[in-house]
Length: 335
Image 1: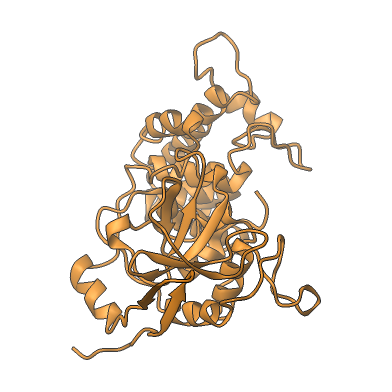
Image 2: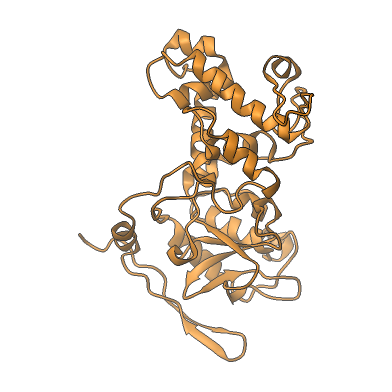
């Protein structure tokens, strides 16, 4: 096999005295492939902090209610529907963390916590109800050819009658997109069982961020001309990946869901690294940077500072995301 890509190398100075040479990561796709044996999978264990701690045990328990679902898939649905917001309400009158419309809730809402009521606003009822509803839909289409989970998701979007009529995911663009979005997002909520493939766009994203070294920080900065080309932390990572054709959400805690989550030992240049004061909840993430190797990241740290290299091994290190094009496309525009 041949080396297909050489990564960026450069010499930089961190602070006034510490210097290091950015790692020349040669053949990163070859090396990562040898280590990984393919892309990471596994959907039974939730990734660290991907579900807020208040709901993690509920999602883990009810996500195993039937073979058509799993905890990561259920988490992806809840994130897509409400961003784990138990008070969410849509213009279409969908309510709560699972966004049930009143008619569907009346039929499929369950008393998940056994307290004698069925409260759409209570995640202890709504999350079990979402899982129960998924499993009911799966039972309706269990004899339809194809993937049971995909047929269940299609039933959630278009109705079981449409899946039965077309003997699989119906030819509706909205439904096909919904199935793809949820099954893609599932990978972001699952703890990978093996190493995950590197991003082919990562080198270009690093090159973009490296060109911004020394640029003053600006809260809310997107690097536009009227902002003097300045960025905040998530503005920088968004612009860096946008330069290679991947559009990320604007804020850091949503960028966390743009792909699978390598462990600290598995980090590769280009991975996004996240920081939080609450290590149990990805929705509480407050800072993001881009890993460059050697335990360092490029980041826009705070007001009064400039874009620079900083170490990632701090007490508030939350985790990492290996950005994928499909993962970024699957993220909702608002949650």
